[in-house]
Image 1 (spheres, rainbow, N blue to C red):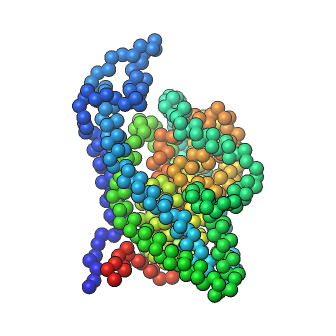
Image 2: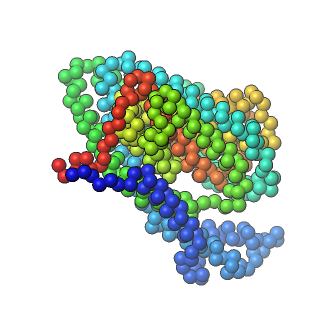
Image 3: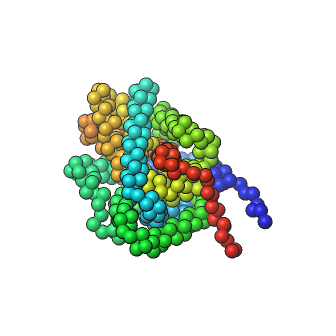
Length: 484
């Protein structure tokens, strides 16, 4: 009996995202309790700051002043307590299976190559293309920000307001400290950090993905070097494990439309001051324009080299793109990216199992482009001159900072501090610079994560085609073996 045709997954996710945005807006515009409700500590402090006189006297608040704060606080509390947890569970489930999927998939992929020389070819081409696309992304960002000059349009009073609102924000100060600690490391520490001293400990944290990949590659190569009859039981075990985890991905994805509803609703009710966001529109537009150009470059490269159409590529990868937008994490999206690239884009596991996990760690095209735009934007707004040599420094530093950067929300701002340090921006300006872009960082983080994931899928297809590992689609639904 033929299966009943259902709405495509990417449309289901889009509907969930739209519903989440509308629900979040609705929650911000309805009363959830009596007007006498006591304001939270956070809301009270905001209101007092707005209505404190120069002598320190706090004026009496009217109901009209208090009501918007009540609405916003109550909406945020309701969504945080009763809606957001479902999105958090979904993201945790994806992160839960990310490391097991990398282990099983990579060992299976290396085992199927039967030849170390083929693996060396895949690895070399992957790294070369990743570095090339990152340099292109940074160059596009620098070109646009120098052409459009969004920093010159920011009034000084807006900079002052942003600094007062965010310079002492815990998120800003924490990222500055993290970046400063990283810049104090030795030149080859990134190589040392790739080699784990305890594989169990390495697999317990998704930020240690490079360590896990190093061990699995070492393990997989050794499988190729022993007798096939001795390696077969191990290979068969990981082949079965890989199929089980991919089935887990299928089942988890059944909840994706509901999860993105929860994630987007939480983003809307947690949004920053709209007036500050409006002040950063030109900066945000520059970043988004650059990201759009990268998408066109990806699609063009795929069309010219593989012959696949724009429509087939975006249809295949769109669920992963939409999840990347909702979660702001390429690591959390990795299981879905691997499933879509293998089954819906036709990249064979020998290639995808290496290219995609490595890409989630070192390929940050969207983030690197954002850093180039943000660094020059901050310098423009603060009247800090940038010579051609300093802009070349931005290219090099952003490229190096992208290697090994954590594939989690907010990592881009840590990398940005490292870029600002490299061009000699005075340290007292760091908090001001980050405060200027903090208000709009989350929505831009969502956008650039989409580009990171799209770039990973693009490189997987290009490398797959170059080594003859791009084949016909092999789509597997969650219920393929259900009831058998």
